[in-house]
Length: 155
Image 1 (cartoon, rainbow, N blue to C red):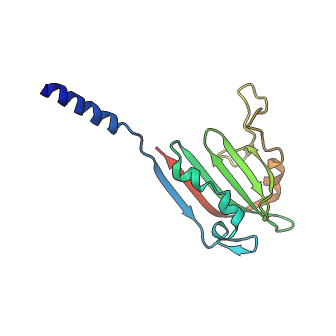
Image 2: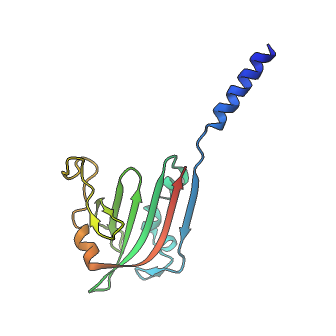
């Protein structure tokens, strides 16, 4: 009987010890100024609502999200770009009112070239993972000014 109790206790300890723990990292830049406000993550209500805080706090999978400030090279108008990486790299481009300019599956390469994410047969993504159709033009005519925030969840 003692061996059975020991075996059950050891089994329970092993099962509890196998639970995956996730390291969570976040950084918010309170000094960035865009869209006429300082610290936009805390002072633009629409951005606070779309900043993926809930996903970051509860994600039980690898997760990366950065929020970036871009500026139009000609008009100097500000735009906020979120880049979320889960199983697909999602880019969403917002104007200062929180309206979505474009968004979809899009990726940056290490050589700073930009490319669409394609299916294995090199066709455009279908279904929920639509490509960001205007991202090429946007990133050619807009400059990264600053980082607003980032969140990382990793096992």
